[in-house]
Length: 74
Image (tube, rainbow, N blue to C red):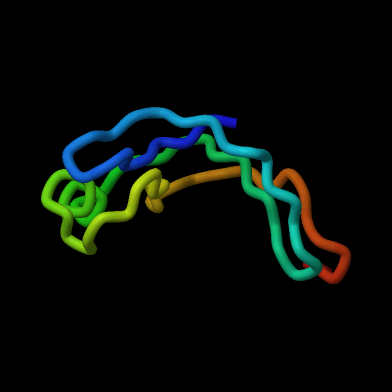
């Protein structure tokens, strides 16, 4: 699957990531729309939280639950 990542401070690109497997209380959400926010911009281009190579960006999202763990009830 693809993910938008800060490759290094000042460089953002798409990377391939392995599809996650949900833990017992987790959900896998298929993103339908994701937008970078101000904290993503500061992180990616100004190093606001330091050097974190291949850090996934974009936490403002709308998605569809596609898989849940065994202990998820509702």
